[in-house]
Amino acid sequence: MAHGNIRALIRVGTLLGSIVLGAAAVQTPAQVTPSTFPPLDPARVECTAFRPKSYKLCYKTANDLHQLIELILAQLSANDVADAILETLPTTPQMFPDGTVVYGPAGFASIAADWAGSNDFSFISVTAPEFRYRPLDTKTVVAFGIVYFTIQDNEHGTIRTFASAQTELMRRNSDMPRGWEQIYEQLAYVQPLLGQR
Image 1 (tube, rainbow, N blue to C red):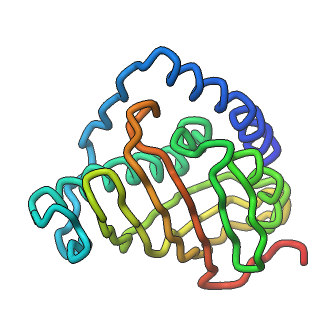
Image 2: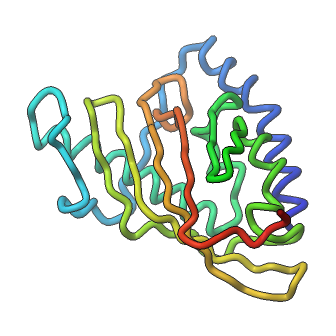
């Protein structure tokens, strides 16, 4: 099933540029991400760097992104990779602990087997119960915390969970389908990768 996910990532990565450029050319407004998930716990929002100085606006910005991230995690958990990566441009850099840097969905697809430790896997659940948000202004948010990936490893006949400490830099962009784009992602593993070395 991972081969299908990897092929979907590559196809989506190839097509994403034309979709994004097409959306920019017609200047369609971004779709609003519905608030279908519980509101963000205020204890997970850090507003000291936020400008203008408004806790209410800071919290609203963080909760807007939180709703989107919860949607993305739910889509990944359902193996709906194509919809889960709408905010990732072909040029979005992702940096891994060994210094590897890949760009966009196609770049990640090229290392997915090493990342998961399997050539044939599917997601069971993807959660980030402790993710924190640090809005810098109404358009830019740093989100960070641990993401837990539970995968069905069909190659080895196992189910396993691994944790990734991640930092995401997200920016509002009305040309994107859901109004946000991922600017940067950095990953550090709470436990080592199980893939080939």
